Amino acid sequence: MAMKTGYRALVDEAMAEIRTYTVQQAQAKLTDPNVQLVDLRDVRELEREGIIPGAFHAPRGMIEFWVDPDSPYYKPVFGEAKEFIFFCAGGLRSALTTKTVQDMGLESVAHIDGGFAAWKAAGAPTAEKESGNRAPQVKQR
View (cartoon, rainbow, N blue to C red):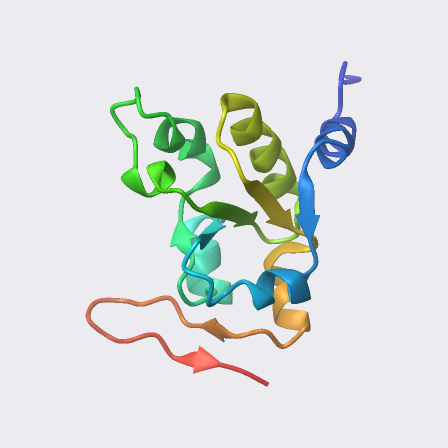
């Protein structure tokens, strides 16, 4: 079955309309209190691959509900006056998400080119996902 519009076309369309940061650009914003990184990956990906310390976890399947103040699932973090930088494993889901929330009216949004895979490959800081009361273990090259 041929798709009317495939995922690649959707991603390409999104990329033409959104802000994209390199890992280095995103990493330079880590200490900025007006920036919030948002991890869209599934919880199993976080457990398997690790996290970016300080990133807010918002599963891709819930993002439209979590950013909309009229939704019963709204998360107040998305009402803060911050720049939101989304990322996923490889940059495809985050491109689509960034376009979606931008279309919904969330201002000052971007995504990380190459996602968490590129982040790890660049040696940027990661940590293990917390389980229970254990503090995250930060890894840096």
